[in-house]
Length: 358
Image 1 (tube, rainbow, N blue to C red):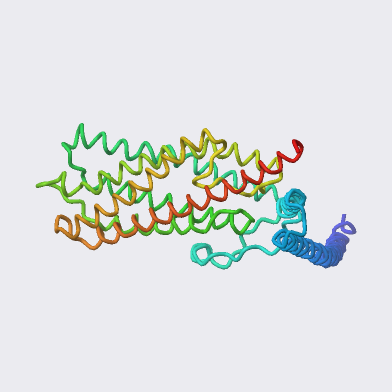
Image 2 (image 1 turned 180 degrees about the horizontal axis):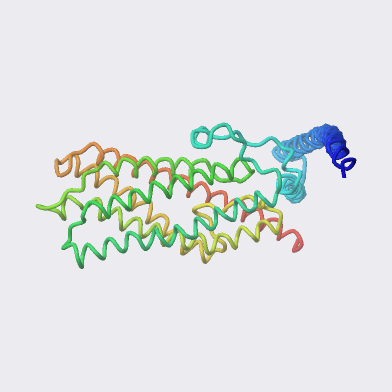
């Protein structure tokens, strides 16, 4: 028993020494693995950059040959489609990890600090995109239900006059909504999505407007209907926006999946605010979007009018009116640009389909 007790500290000492040696061996193995992985990553990064440069060079060469009429247009279209598929494979597969990421916006750094938000694995990137789509789906319903509820309560319970708290609660929710959208969209851009910068800037403007609206005193009686006309129109516009968002989320995602299957889009791409799946959906969605943008501009001009004629003269009214007009003009411009790009793409597809007939 004494022998065993005397040997016990020695055994513990030997066990500790063995554990220390194993820790050193593990550290050396991990360092070797990381060093080898870093070297392999550099090699893959150089190959990815070289391939991307080749795609850009060949597309530029095709454009030059086409402009100088040195190549058959149908062949040029076919080669351009092949290069586009190669580019989608490069940017949509695991090799995209080794391409330089887009710089993080100051907005993202302001909220998260100097943190790299680019996912190294494609499945993680796709989860980020799916979460963004789910967020849009949830907020589309709230965008429709929240203002509709306020307008109904105004007519049935509040005698045609909004109380302050519910309206400010809605504006606080808008601030949360647009901040969440802007953060998610910036993260998606870093991870290779094609979201247009204007839509992110649009959400910045909407965030500022919601923040300013929180300081806007909601006037009551007397002349409540006249003083709250801007609030009423804003809620009606928000309901139209909710309907448009529901249509976009339902129809456009189907179109995006089709484009991904054809190699015309990347899996990290998202639907834009004015594209739709087929012509029938365009005939439904485009007029709604243009009406929505016109109504947005009208609300902005009405707010400016109420400020300048002295009905509601606070600076918040003027500021929100200007923002409404700016967002309406920006939305209209981007919608027209996207429809023109869609028209050019359709013309190109018709040319390529007519080739077998010839």
